[in-house]
Image 1 (cartoon, helix red, strand yellow):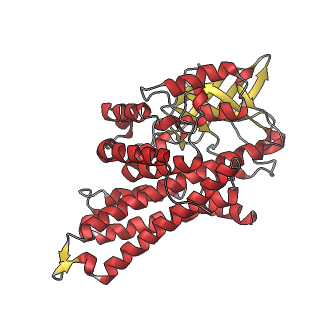
Image 2: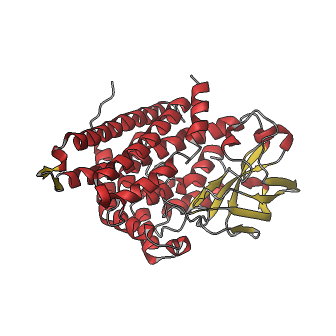
Image 3: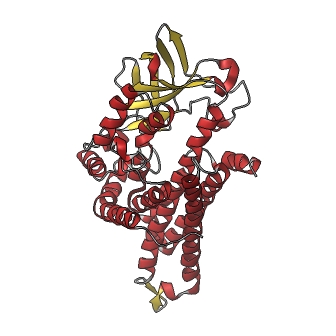
Length: 400
């Protein structure tokens, strides 16, 4: 049976995330959310100093094995930390999650490629400046939710990789929604080698951001997650060594992509739980001090019921995600339908209950004087992150 008592390591990591989140992430997230120009967010001293402190604490390298300089934490512990960080700064938490995408994929797909490990894994783990950020690019302007349609040969990446002697030449652009797209020092790029095979004709490449021909658009100006840099990387005649292809095209492509989706959806679900917690805890506190009709509004049954339903959603979503993480611990990468379903449930609940918590504040709920309106804005991005809930639901249902 599952034991809900935290281990010493889990308690230490969650406590550290709690203190860091409350003292550093939350004030930075709130202040940067109010910056009108998204470009100014990511060049600000506040943003850079916050990321630097996150890297110093090792939050960027939690899943990487300790033999490479990572923390070597298992999925359940990592999930607890993601929730805690998201409770205080969901945009920063969402930034840290894909930070390690390239090092993790190198270790997973090319564990004997010492050159890539020495270039991109070890320096990443050693970085305490908060600048060795990585990103992965699969979705494109023409390839969005159908990027999980592995069986239709008409669906393929339009970013192309052409073999020339011992090098690959990459041309194309990824979608505007590449997380960390404008900050990454290195990308993991999915590019088409054989379009006749659809998505199975794509290879996976490690592309340094300083390679000639790599550029980025401006960061998206979004309603929420304003501390998560999202923009479109562009590749124009980008030359990389043949050894930078870490996964060739072929029949195993769905396995690779499904593995990424299985892990990624759990992470998004934990963001949703942290966001619900933030709205719930602040609404609960407000309800016990705001007096109407002669008593704190918490003592009015309709308000208490809103709070209770939010509490139930937090606990049930967390338990669902914990099971997904437990399955990932038992056998990598876990169970896809559980991860998809848990993400869908958590993010749907986040939209419902952050809105309800905003209503508990009455007219103040729509004022930027209180953070709860931000949580509502943030929640709406979660339903489309790592795949729209509608398409994810179709995929999960097919796996029943």
